[in-house]
Length: 244
Image: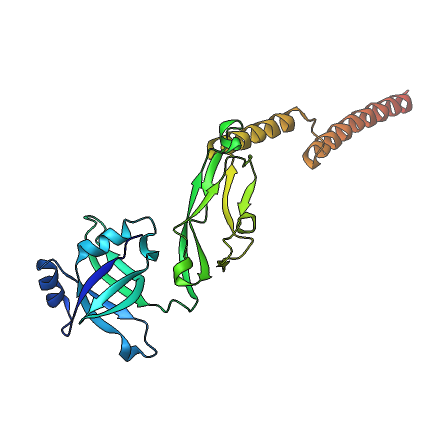
């Protein structure tokens, strides 16, 4: 990969008006971090076009490059950047100075490839849960991305961090149990199944005889009325015999 150098100029003034003037001059504000104290942070201005070229490269924000300030080059990666959400215009960029022999912690994007068997043959949907992993490695060993083949993933099966094979010089800091992707039943199918179960339950309940307390009470009342009628008939017959 060819060496990338971004030219920076020192910046002493701050504020919204200053930043507007910078952007009007095709520059954006930024800060170089990496010193032992906050005082070591160096405000600078850079060309947004040069930074956007880095962001659009294969390694994106994890690209290792040189930032040149006052004739001195410092090895950096992008720490943070701010983009205008509508126009996509780059508004601000922070850089983190690194030592090539010291481990750093960065986040690397996950890319899924292939069509899961659970989608192709079993009617499921692929749910992409975790799109980046946190890792620790030397600056020169940062992967461009993690490419994960999900073609063998079946319905209701999960792909976790523990299923991935890390490069030899990279240590993953994201927990092993974190789900990267899984194939799920579509929500419409779940809702349809739940409605079907509810309808079956209602039909079964309607077909059952009345055996609850209300039913028992009705039965008791009928028995009481029948007993009362029998008692009345016996009493009438006894009264008739006495009169005779």
